[in-house]
Amino acid sequence: MADRGRVGSLIVGSKSCAEKCWRKDHDLHRAKLRQSRSAVDISSPATLAMDHFRNNLKRERLLEDRYVEIDRENQVLLKKMSDQMKKPNPYLKEGPENKPTSLNRTSRKKELQSITKENRRMLKAIQEVKPVYSVKNWDENYKKSAVLLRNCSSYPVITRLPRERSTSSVLMQLDPEADGSGSLSHSRQGSPQIRSGEDHDDPKYVLKEGKRIGATYYLLEMSTDGRVLNISAYDGETQTSLELVVKEKIHRLLYRELNGDYAAVADRLKVDNSRLILDTSGLPGA
Image (cartoon, rainbow, N blue to C red; front, side):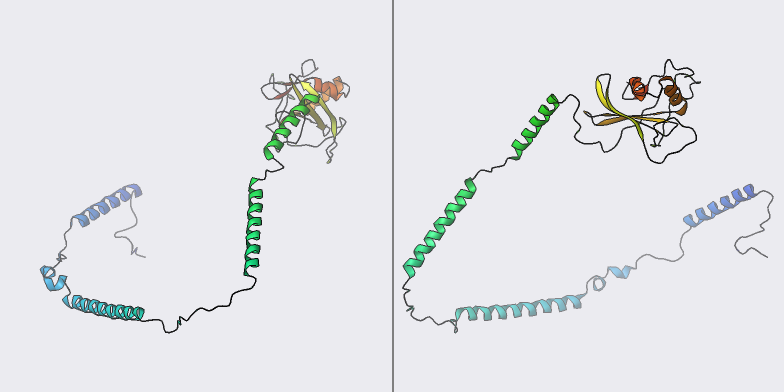
């Protein structure tokens, strides 16, 4: 079946060479089209420069007559309005004003004056009154109370919990063989004992206490799921939280070495560059 979209045969020895030849012929064809001149004269005829083509005298005459008619109607309307304003109003009758005098006019005038005087007095009292409560004084008293509360408290005062936790800290790996140095984990399950092969859905904490690490006082929380140990340290002054996840190997070594005393595990915690670190030196196999 012949190819109606092309000129020539579709079978070629080299498709790339055929493509180059086709593109070259196509470019030559487009160049010739750009250089070709039209055989038809498409320039404007010389008759367009005549006056009767450029100016429509009949339309201008009709517009001029219309404007004259509008001007004449406006003049007639203005004259009618002027004549109407000069005439007296037939519906307004100006007669002698013989209104009866009110008997209680004086009393009503005095009553109105007394009401006006009372309104002025109340307005002046409202404008000059001072507020009983002051937001500025409340703010100053709150700041003073906060200072006194911090001075009287032995530990940092926590007024609210943070909205979000900071980046979790991890154990620093000292050598390539330290497999259980630390890792990130998203699990928050807990169990108070070291058990293998058991999973618990409800989180249970093994330690909740306040402890001073370095120069900062933290609120510590430890939870475990029987394998990993999750440690969280909250700083009430800066409203920040540090987290550490101890892998199962280090957790078991600490549990056997310290006889399950998580308070002793808390004594091994350190803070370095806003990262919570657990000191695993001295553990066998660590």
